[in-house]
Image (cartoon, rainbow, N blue to C red; front, side, top):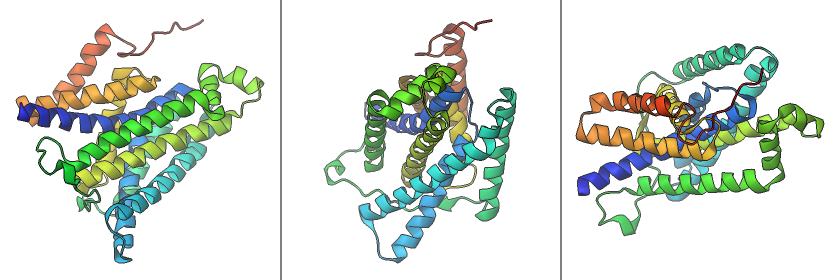
Length: 299
């Protein structure tokens, strides 16, 4: 039972990170029908920014939770700026082009950002400092670490706050209006460009939070972590139902548990086989994902 619980909470931790990144995918798709394949690189840039910030701040004497908060805040601001700039440079000029053009642009930006960090940093794995301190009340607990509890808590709080933001705020209502009918929302006075920019900023913020937390949990990063995490998070978004916020969270959790139990009870060599095999199985019976809704194309 103890081993099962370790795998359960390990999968929940993975799923939480996938969910934070998948929310960015599903929000952008819901607003402008675009798969932002460069989103994983924003997650990676957030992790590298936190590493650089933590190294600089530790020299100044910061430590403990203050170091985590300050490094995380810097990473969030920097990543949000990258997401905002990415939308303005790579996607906005192609908004009226065919849907294939922004998709190719997204893949190109993903490759560009990977190589940019590779040249600016290194191709080797870099050690990431353990910014998350151990909680005293978990000293006797063997099935969960403090970093795992913090990741689960931050994911739950972030998801709840985002849900309230979308449901009750003026900008959230504007985002829902643009997702439903962009042309009509524009005619009613909604600033569509601002809504799209805010969507990218929110998605980049959540990706940066995930990058900082999981890097501190694992203890190492390199320039390629964004591609792997991005593909898995995109899989989670599709699994839960692309365009659905609860679907992104559910898909992340299901994917995390699948990988964790497959690694623990079968072999780590088959982790991806089980993950993508589950995706194929779900989409055969639920083409729109677990919580997705099928929509008819109007001709």
